[in-house]
Amino acid sequence: MLPSAYGIPAAIALVLGGTISCFAGYRLFRFVLAIYGFILGAMLGSSMIGATSTGAMVVAAIVGGIAGALVLTLAYFVGIALVGAGLGALIAHVIWQSSAASEPPALAVILFAVVGSIGAMLLQRYVIIIATAFGGAWTLMVGIFAMTGDRQAARAAASGNVWILYPTSSPGQRWVPVVWLVIGLVGMAVQLGITGKQSR
Image 1 (cartoon, rainbow, N blue to C red):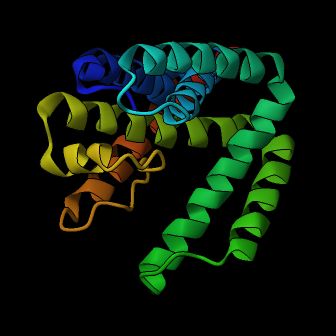
Image 2 (cartoon, one colour):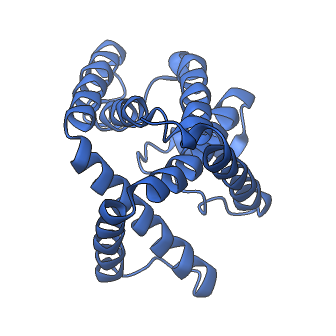
């Protein structure tokens, strides 16, 4: 993860990117793919460098981000399949955590991801709208948490764990998934009613 000095600019980028994705993700899908490719690439790039080397970590985040943005933008159909796979994996986590309060088995996540990929290719418009609305809503919330100095977000970021961006991973804050769901539903309604009607 990036050093704390870069926290506010990164948080602002997350809020802006999340807002665009949530409310105009279908209309601007290629741009949204570039945003999420950059975020994923930056997370992976910065996690490969030791936390003591700030300059190298920032460079790795930028290089990883650019590479991630290029990969997802150029691989448009692969990007759609990945969006579906990500949505399927998220659904698997939500189902297992709501029923058994535990992590789903790897096979279940893989099966949900495969079904999500196939569904994304068959029902592109609706899958893109749902995935960008809820993915954007969570990105927006993570950015707001980072900007407001949320204690749990700060602890999670300080832990060095790259994979902290789960809507259901907020113990003690039961309102977080509810707010995420509401924002996602509003974003989905806006896209279905207004922005998603226009061609990409």
